[in-house]
Length: 66
Figure (cartoon, rainbow, N blue to C red):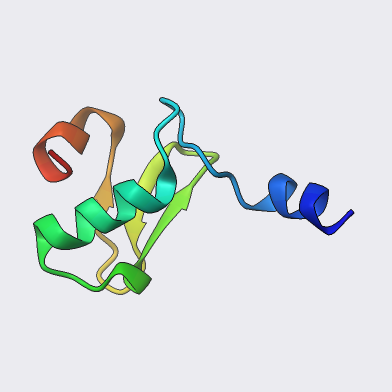
């Protein structure tokens, strides 16, 4: 039951089917920030640095998480 609830609230893949944790690690490395500052907003299909407010939109992923 807990697994089902977790899947409802914590998506494992982003809009393009990429692993969210891997993308966050790439974004943190590319931007020189801490991985704990990044999150994925499923409703907007955007990655966000919650400390700085920086958002990485789908068309920018190749630039930041290459």
